[in-house]
Length: 357
Ligand code: C5P
Image (tube, rainbow, N blue to C red; front, side, top):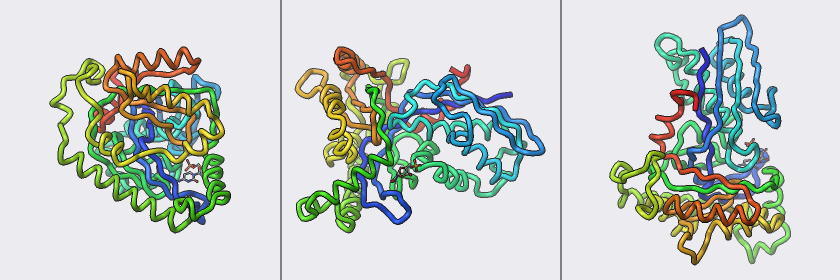
């Protein structure tokens, strides 16, 4: 019998980029947040003499061969577990294919979770290989820097190249409007453009872009975020104390985002990619201004580019404000969808939909 798993989107509440490393990656300090919006990934697996994978999708832009992250994850997992199976994966794509929302990375983890459930051999797959939870984290990091976060869910600190992930205090579900402009941004190119900034600017004027100073800046930000965590823990209101509507979102005007988001905003969280991506696509900076809605009754709690884009998001006190901003985006010809941030407990309790919906 096939198993379906929800494959949730993420946003980056903030993302600071360090200098390039010898392995071609960049050190990062980022805060990820999972969203309710999701794709659906269905896996069926039958033990066989050798592994074969067949991948389909409702979206022709999704690669259906070994370039697909879900394919890679399933192949690696079976290999590491010493199992062989005839596997069918179907990806019901509902999220933008390339947009800074981690959709492809999430597909990999959803496929792994569905595969594990499919192969629920007596006593659970964890018994097959000691240390499987740590091993699957390593496999996820092998598939991509943005993949391991989906093995944690909620609000997550990402260090190293983004794959070294740590759960942060859970935040109440908050209304989130995601703008999906029809602009493609290449992540490797955006990193190269960031590096180029360091070469053309006077390091004395912009010490953040030199190697040592870049690493110092990341360390400083890690401390700042840890401090924000500690502050938010001290004044944390448990999610259960709030009255939510059927979607789990606080009704308009009843709450702002959790204390962690407020503390991070006060700490000056931001996304370094905005500097290079907005310079190339000024329209995206304009979309951010619409999302911010500064000085209006719909003013966002926080708005930013997600990852290297081109998606941008705004967090709002309630649905009413987010709907009003969505209307303004629509008038500017920009597509957007309304969702909410997904706390860790909800992420895990909703991962296997009862009716694959
Ligand atoms: O890890 P992932 O495959 O998602 O990374 C895609 C590309 O993005 C890498 O090949 C690299 O060029 C760039 N990257 C980077 N530093 C990171 C993450 C990604 O330079 N921390």
